[in-house]
Image (cartoon, one colour):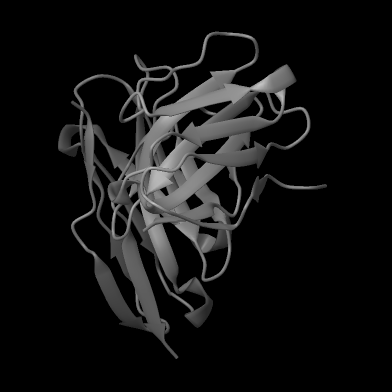
Length: 114
Length: 114
């Protein structure tokens, strides 16, 4: 079946502009995660959605970052007033539900802020 | 705060050599542990995971990892590597008290000489 998809695959934007990154999880997966991977760094947890529960936003680095998940499926990560330090690969993953369930990752969106 | 250390940033081996990649974490409570792999041009995927039971965990493609609680370690091993094992390997930890958050190490790049 289809895996996790993300769009766009690449995004180049100017400092100060807003960007939206999209994630389509695997059908039936109730858990969805966003991570950020900066050059030479590991993955940094950003936010977690589980079903209809309130999301865990503890990893969002600033109030310029927000995410939503509509209808328990597609998720959008929004970065407002982008800064150069926001340049990174943004990865989305989904799983059946609990933390011990395997997370399936998408291909990522490479964001470059000029 | 929790952290994960992967001390080897780049490991170069010849085919058939034995492999051990180090992973240490800092958290005193109960943990779930993971190794993920990213092959060139592919998505991140799960190699193996530990959350209870036998501390020696076997994963895909002949990999295994041993959880040593007293050493806060979860090292990845393979007795004989192949050229196709060339990839980046990430260790990750979830504290069971932190339901959704997974902390990733910075990764180890493994290069296998044919």
